[in-house]
Length: 163
Image (cartoon, rainbow, N blue to C red; front, side):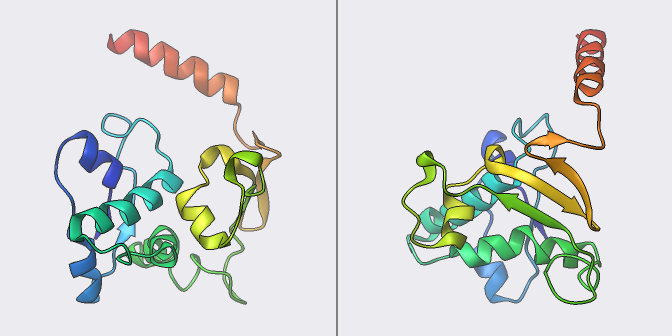
């Protein structure tokens, strides 16, 4: 199952029964849905929302801890795609997909638990570098394989065309 909590909130679709699904060994991954129902498309936000919504939905503050939410956003997503043997975790023989996240910025201090910080304090704005299959695709916050100005221009053109 792919859980899209931001989209569910925007569309008033309710709170998914994530704790019950996990208890039944259902693989719950995270997604963002699309821009029409989730403007941020930020998987960090989805991890945070998945954890917090489960807590408020059950009244159990220990429900869907940060490590579970992180797994939902990484290895569980790979498993949902049938790719967990190739991606989703850092083990020898798997594709090296890495994301460097600045969690020492003043707005995210103090740090007591790095995993909790990734899930509950960090956002896409804290991503500094990304490697996919060993290729750096984000360098110091800048896309290296995509012309951002061209994408923005094309998006504006489609926005005007659709308006």
